[in-house]
Image (cartoon, rainbow, N blue to C red; front, side, top):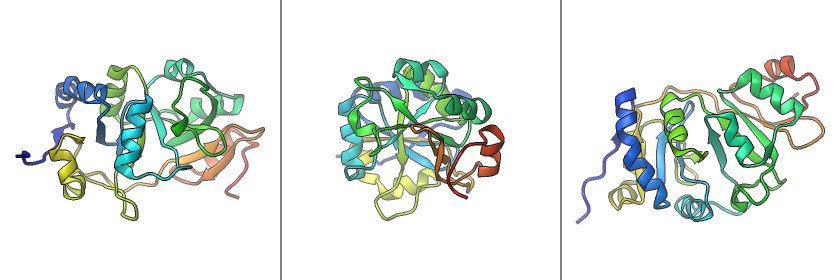
Length: 223
């Protein structure tokens, strides 16, 4: 018989630290996590192909819609062979950690193909969420990320939202829920494609284009 599904406390620093050993084991088994971010709750896991496939199956993700990577240190970009152009480096220096997602070139042979977007880039964000930073540093690798919701439903803003929608998956141990409480409504991250000659805004969000142009004047897109 399945146990009653519940979340793992992931609010205070002691709770975060206590959750990490079992969470790392779950990730090593290619399990999927649900976790709070600086915007909404996300689903994700390790970056190996088996873990990415498990995430694709859970989300029923169609081809051509990749996941982004959450990082917590600069060396994670280097180890994956991702390329920070001059413009990308200037944006990262100004806005990371923060709600800015950069689409970067590179990573051939080191990043699962399913993480690569239709134009060839890999989306990366340095999360400012302190609990996630601690977890990602303990992993030593980025954490994949996508919104924690079923297709056609709004993103989850609380652990209760996920418990209500994914009860069976949590009870079976397919999904491990890190409970960071209820999040405050916020704009999504701004997404900038840095794979071309000029950085291009492909999704407006929490960081305005005006602020982006203060850092990189030749950025294009979103008026």
